[in-house]
View 1 (cartoon, helix red, strand yellow):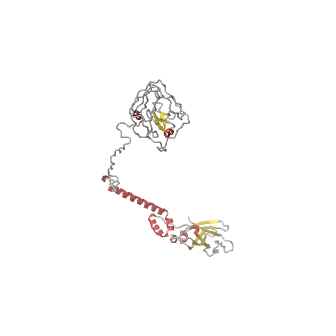
View 2: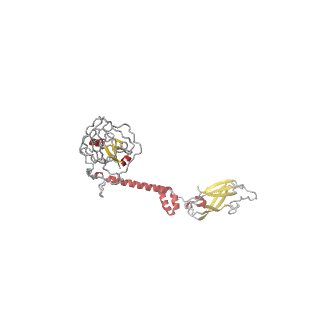
View 3: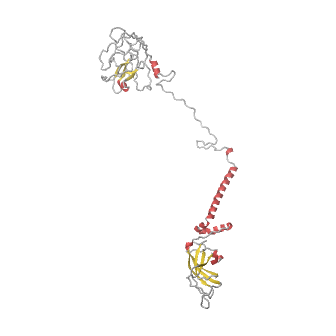
Length: 422
């Protein structure tokens, strides 16, 4: 549905679509002077039966407009202009606005403009105003469907200031050409620019990107460029330094391994008995030894006895660990002789499953009251001999030892035998 409205600034009468007015809350832009006003407040009677004015200009004279011929449903009161206003100058011929894109005002309706014309001055009735119809059909309604009756039941939007009516003020501004209005709005392109609806020219092609192969860089085609120049290639001196660095690194690793073997030689020999001969041969120039295990918990004394060596002394019972003192021929207790000779018998057993070192024996000689008189440590060389003491105590074996003793200045009545690793 289209409404006929009048511009309050220049007096141009044109039609506007109802959907466009509702979209902008009644505000619309004049197609002649680009003035924005309330289209509902300036609605005039429909003059669709009046043919459109030709493009040729006609002299226009200001006259008092008569009241509308038919009552309109709008509640906006009609205000007639002053009758004493002088005639307005003839309006210039305005060509139709060119078809332009709707980018600046995407939702604004497009209209075909023409100058407003007025009849000759006189008391006669005012001719029907010129009507500018929009060439765009209303969306959602076929062209053959009659326009419904539009009624406005709300009060018009109040103006902030009164706008002059057509022929009201003699010194009002003259209508501006459409070209100037479109140029101010930015719709008309500059001179020399490409047409708005013409095909856009393709952007200028840039110069092709050329990659120059340089020495020392790898190309993308699969073939490898030389990474180094001839003068940067490593020489024999660099190769010698590299070889020396690798050799030093290997020597340091060997030295570290040898040091670890030297420190943990006993543990290695116990874990791998087959390596003991090699370790012992390696220790000869270093003046070191490969010791055997020292597990005193797996070595025990299974039996021992201390016996007097002379015929006049009383012999102690085997296995008791005690010897009784002799008496003089008169039957009384004799004094301790200057020297006493004894023989110590002991049985040692290794219950471990690997050879061990020989332990050291501790012999304590006591009197009849159990007081310690003499303590002596017997090394493996003392109770085995130097040759046999150099050999290890075989695994799961038993050895009987015999040690002669000579005691002077004390009277021995008992003993105690123990062992340990120094």
